[in-house]
Amino acid sequence: MAVNLRRTFNQAGFVSLRNVLTVNEKKMIKNVIYENFKQHIKLPKLSKFDIENINFHKELINFRKLKPKKFGEIYDKINLNSKFRSLFYSNKFMNYFAKCLNVKSNNIYINGFMMRFDAPFDLRNKLNWHQDSPYYMMSYPKYNAGVCWCAITKNNDDNGTLKFIPKSHSKLIKTIGSKKNKHRSEQYTLNITERENKKTENLNQNFGDMSLLHINLKHRSGDNTSKKFRITIGCRFIDMAKSFNVGKEIYQFNNERFNKK
Image (cartoon, rainbow, N blue to C red; front, side):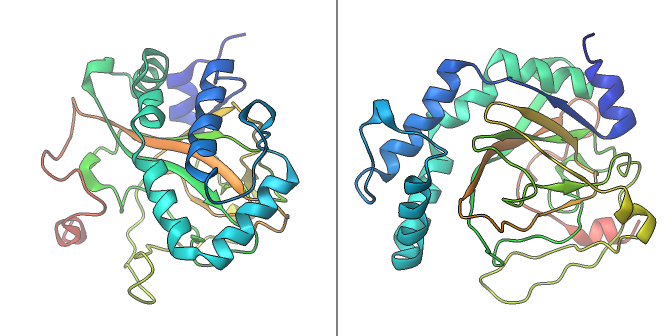
């Protein structure tokens, strides 16, 4: 039975679909990763390159440790890659987004493109319980928007897959931002009740699976206790038809306006 994307997205705050990425789309993502790292770490021929191969992850972990600046530069290049970003502009993905938001696909704005490489036992990039809406306020005040996650590695509790609370998206919770130092992003951390904590689920995915999360859904980073990177791709998709703050398509804007409400 087909999933009613709009109804499920509204009621549960998330939709999960299996095998969304095609063979060619998976190949394209693997090629982008391979081409950007092949000159810096030891890799087999492209035809034999396996995302799950432990040797690839060992090489990547060592490279990140020994040359963090260079690793960061490559990470930024990958996230700016036009081929990678074009995936989310395809008719397939735009139709998914449009159905969830109940708008025409020509009324959707996409931002926050990401190919994440979450390293084992990394605390620097870990986020506590939060909602994405305070960071991406261009959808204020209706917040008819969502976040798309696609797994590139097999993601589960062991490698720190995202944790979320179903049906926790009904409203935006006001929080005060905090920032530990200049190298870390500002965080809008939520306090979670024991009852909510018991409802927590893991975003378990295989390579090619996709999940669409409401921008108000409460979630946090998991703990990667494995020996591999957790690799995911995604973006944020926003309804431009009902409420959209033109010119504010940036990371967290004009929070004073929000706090006065």
